[in-house]
Amino acid sequence: MKAMVLTSCCDMAHTPEPLRPMELPQPVPGPGELLVRVEVCGVCHTELDEIEGRTPPPRFPVIPGHQVVGRVAATGPGAHLFAPGDAVGIAWIFQACGSCDFCRSGRENLCPAFVATGRDVNGGYAEYVTVPEAFAHALPPGLKAAAVAPMLCAGAIGYRSLQLSGLMDGQDLGLTGFGASAHLVLPMVRHRFPASRVFVFARSAAQRAFALELGASWAGPTEAEAPVQLHAVIDTTPAWTPVVEALKNLQPGGRLVINAIGKQEADKAALLGLDYPRDLWREKQIRSVANVTRADVREFLALAAAAGIRPEVKEFPLAEANRALQELRRGQGRGAKVLRIGAQGRGSC
Ligand SMILES: [Zn+2]
Ligand SMILES: [Zn+2]
Image (tube, rainbow, N blue to C red; front, side, top):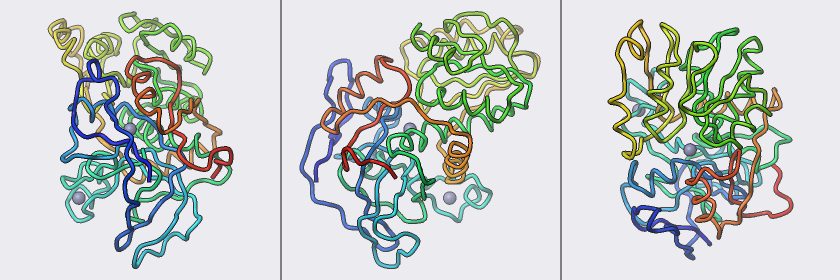
């Protein structure tokens, strides 16, 4: 099968094409697993973190990709939840132990044995992938594969971030960074909290214009002062400056939710600009979001289907995965990027 493969971590500024096209044997589903023929795989910022070593894969070579939409091609021994031909999605959570305190309390995202698709095991930048059937997701009918793929991470982690923000209807939310996840959070807020206003901070004027198009009440640059003090802010950037700026814009008791698996070192000195009475005092809270649970994925898919939430998607062929990653790294384009891998022209689940 064709795959785009990462063989070592590198700095994408010096290695513009970190993934290599390879012909690999088709994987064989083990007990309780599905073999999935991939139709579309989303491109996520976490791939940049894997490639550049902020969340390095434990071994190489590895096939990245954790927003996988495809059809069951075969079932392994004992697998019985899906049949060949069924449309399924695979998300970042590939496996958790099921027996630790975290797993038993509904926080399998924090399981010490958490296995991540496309980092710890091969993912969806390939024609085929295997997954434990208990961690595969049935897809809502009527959605196109390219629309579902970004929901599996960008949407699900956005859903989790919004839950952790504690936002209630009528409260004002800030979004700093306006990429694939934030552009799904905005319509989700408008659906769930119709009386709430959303304020968007983004470096690029194109992203700010996109946010206003999607219904944001206001959009400004990262360092701007919001016209009101915010109840919560969700940060989806890879940088530190937006963290400091977001804390300034929070009202007393407000909460900043950081949705990032790592932060780049480049602007870490921005943290020295933190002013305790202005930015942290008065019970402001900072919380990070880590991984997703299966429930996050399933609840977001159901919500998106019911509320008509659809991502804006740009498609690339599998062989152009490096170009998609470079565009993501440079913040080019708007919405989500996906790789089209199989079933070109049909492509609906
Ligand atoms: Zn992701
Ligand atoms: Zn566990």
